[in-house]
Image (cartoon, rainbow over all chains, first blue to last red; front, side, top):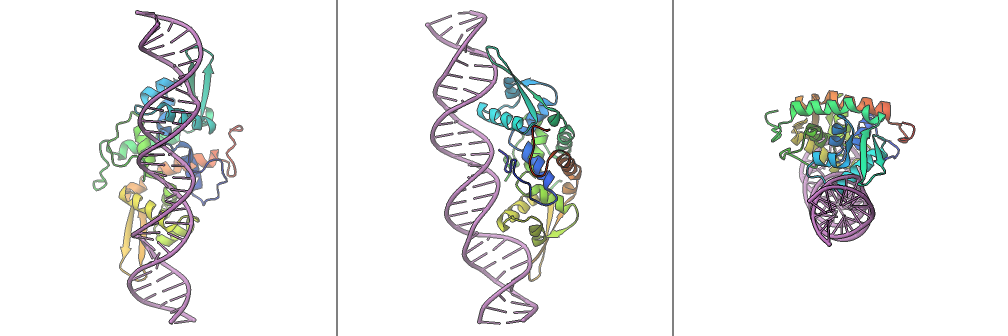
Length: 119
Length: 119
DNA sequence: CATAACGGTATCCTTTTTGACACTATATGC
DNA sequence: GCATATAGTGTCAAAAAGGATACCGTTATG
């Protein structure tokens, strides 16, 4: 869970920044949102994209994103189970934010090591 | 400390996103960066802007930001001590990112409560 | 002499987050 | 009859993050 959730925000001017970080923070949330921007995905599809994520963690992250109204969870009454995840309107509106993050990352993060001296 | 720091980034395509999040995540980093965008600040000036931050936490966050090359710490050999913090080039380049975060937050976060239903 | 300002450290403790691992139900294919 | 796929849940433990509190040296000020 993010550090401050659904509590009054009493911090100073930079606060909206923290507010968003609280939503997209969490070890996998950023990547999940990023992948969902390309379209609807099922649970195990996401799981395969996020190697190393455990089922429990993935479930948690998805539940939190859902609770924050960023994604939509659609359960099909089938067997074997089928659950689809997609971005909500609110989630889709985050696109520029994620893109800004990705652009900066691409431009400023060496992929094997962050070399601060050379920056 | 961010969850993954200065390690190889072996995650999939959304990874730069996580990379940046790892840098600006931390309870106070976003706000610190935000405030430093308006100009150089001394330790206690930052502290006064971040009510409720403890000295230890502030020191930690500043040290991490410094280690990531986002801010510059300048110590003056005076008494009483004087230490100035300012954004590095790399830090300043984060401005569009922080602005994107802030814009979304301003537009999408109710200040007293996140109302998911109404979103 | 005592106090305050400055920019921290050191130590301890609690909370939060993440990870490992086992377990579930049902239907299908072999 | 057994394994496989799906989308989870439950429990426990470890690690990371954050918080409380006390302390440091120096100088100026009262």
